Image (cartoon, rainbow, N blue to C red; front, side, top):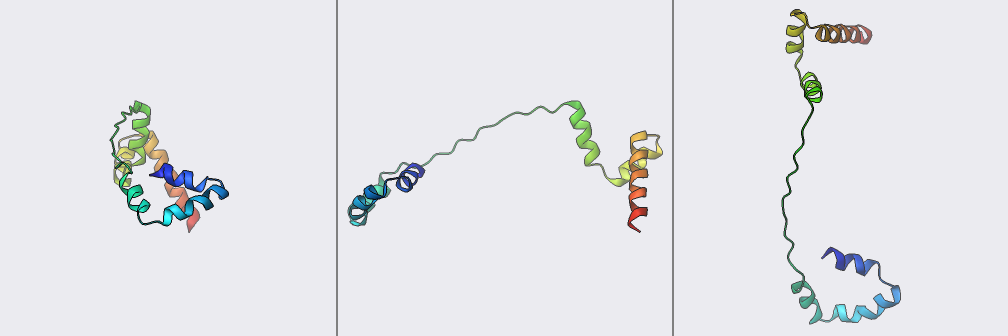
Length: 94
């Protein structure tokens, strides 16, 4: 169905003029719609493996502020730096 539309838009203007009377006839229109094959869809599944570093980065990105505060109080240096960065950002907004 898409190829029929694409070929009609890409056709030569003189050819398009010649085919217009046929497209207007009542007998050719139903045949063109009935002869088009029905499209079928198939589902393709792709498998993606994420590295452990990417998984850790994703986990840090979706971590809540409560989790970050808990980790910071446990001695996690990355969480402590993040809390300090957030506190500095709040000071500059005020």
